[in-house]
Image (cartoon, rainbow, N blue to C red):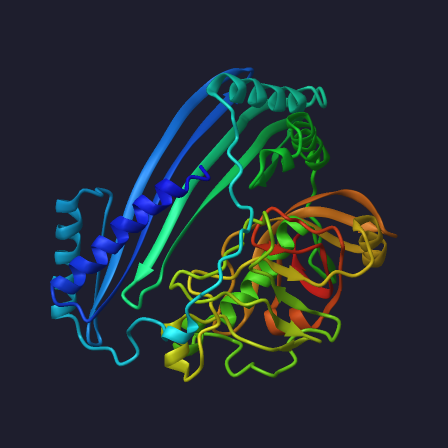
Length: 443
C-alpha cells in the first residue's frame, strides 16, 4: 500500500476512539486497528480449485477505570460503531475486578523512533497470473517422478495491510506491510506405501520467493524420498532436527521464559535468569529492526520500544520475554515483547546440512513432528516424528511412526551443534540442530 494518507486516516479513527473512551470516563485507553486485503489462488490437478479475495478490517479497544480493565472489538469502523464498541469496553471495565498490575506501559518505555523497515512490497499480480503460477508450481511437483500419484494443490497468497496502534499516553503510530507465499503439497505412491509432503516459500517481497518450479520440485522430491518408510526399533541415539522443525525446540524455550508461564509458575525454567541453560556456544539474539524481515517492528503490541538484545549469550539466559503486565507481576521491566519476539537469530556454526549429517554420523534425522507433546511445567517432551535413518553421515532410508522423547532441560544442554542451513521463513531463524542423544520409541 505504502499509502501515508490511508495510514493518517486510520490514525484519526484511533484518535477519535481514544477521545471517546476518555469522554465515557476511562482513565486510560489503548486501541489497535488493522485493514488487510489480498488474493489467494489454489490450483489442483492442473486446474483452478479456488480463487479468494480477502478484504478484512477490525479494531480492538481496551479501557481502564483505574485498575479495572475492559476490552471490546468490532469490524465496523463507522462513528456509531466506534462509540458502541467503546461503550461495551467501558461496561465490562466498570464491573471487572481491580488488578493492581493492569494498565498501560510506562511512558518512558514507549517507542519514539520509527525507522523505515522496508516491510511493504505490493505484488502486482492478478488472479490469472496467480493461477498460472500455481499451475506451474504443481506441475513441477507432479512431473518430478512417475510415483507422484495425486496432489493437494499449489497455492499463491498475497496480502497487504496497514496496522495502527495508539494509546492515551499520546502514542499513535502505524505502518503498512506485505506478505506473499507460494506452497505446494503432493502425494506419492509405490506399492502399498503412500506418502505426502510439501514445500513453501514466504517473503515480504515477491522477488524474494523461491521460483514456482523450484518449490514444486522440492515438494515432489521430499514426497518421493519418503516412500517405503520403515519403523525402527526402540533405542537411544543422536538426533538431528532439520531446519524446518528445529525452530520448534527454540519455540519451547521461548514459551518457558515467557512472562505468562513464569508468573503462573507453569514453566520448567522458573528463576532461570543468569542460569546456564544451553551449551556455551549458543547465542539467541533478537533483531527487531532487520529490514524486509518477517518479524520486524520498531514497537510491540503495546507501543513499547522493541530491543536488539541477546536473550541467551554463552548459553546463559540474559532476559525473559515480557509484556508490561507480566513484567509488573514479576517485579521486572517490560522487554518489548507484548505480542511475541521479533526475528530471533540462533547462532550458527560453520557446518552446512551435509556437514551436520556427517556430525550426526549414525542416528535419526527428523523432518516432521506430530502432536503437542510438550509439558511446560516439567519440560517433558514427547512427539510423534518421521524422517530418515542415517549411517556414516549418509541417509539410508525413510522412517515413520516413531516417537522421540526427552526432557527439554537435558535436550537444551545436550545440543552439540547448530548448522548454518538457516530457515528464514519464520520469526525464529534457525539452522538444523544436533542433539547428543534422545529416546526413540519404535517397534
